[in-house]
Image (cartoon, rainbow over all chains, first blue to last red; front, side, top):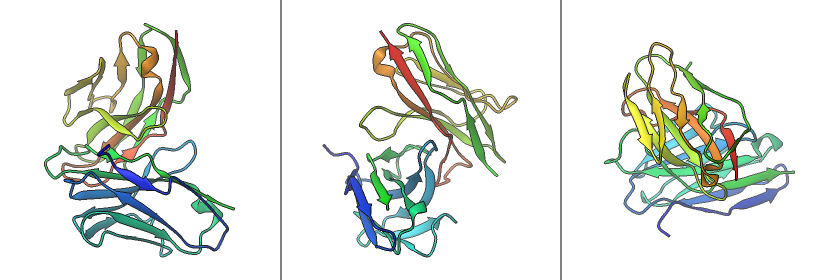
Length: 115
Length: 113
């Protein structure tokens, strides 16, 4: 399977702990996105990378959130000092510069539960 | 700001019934419009798109027409199948080359035999 891969699929943590999610995009895709989806809502944009450069960040991405894509391949999303409001599904997507606008390929997501 | 308002679900239809899922948008400029679908246990995937007024996107028997005068992009299918059971999301990107999508809240469709 050469789709977008996300790990772990589910993380349960206590409030105040740090968590990290990993995303492996489709190998030839140079664009990578993180979205967050809460229950009953659509995905909300968090941040965007082109290769290793983080080019756009949403206001939703507070100081406790940091995303990296060190070699322009996989990406990590770290949440420090988690809060119950961080409980959500974190979605990663990738796309090719050759693809049309909005043609994103999504992973299955990493579900975070903060107790 | 830019937003998408989507018909609330869930929607339950019998096989071969006609489907309409309403979507309206608010945006400045000339957004591109999309329908994404999420089948059970899978990630979101692009179903169809339209990039300018009066364009019709189509795929797998689904269609949607970009209506600027009514700011709508309603999803239709003439005869649904059980395999169409999924959650459908309407989305927009506010300009060509924009890197983020604005999604609606999703509509769950269940098709019963």
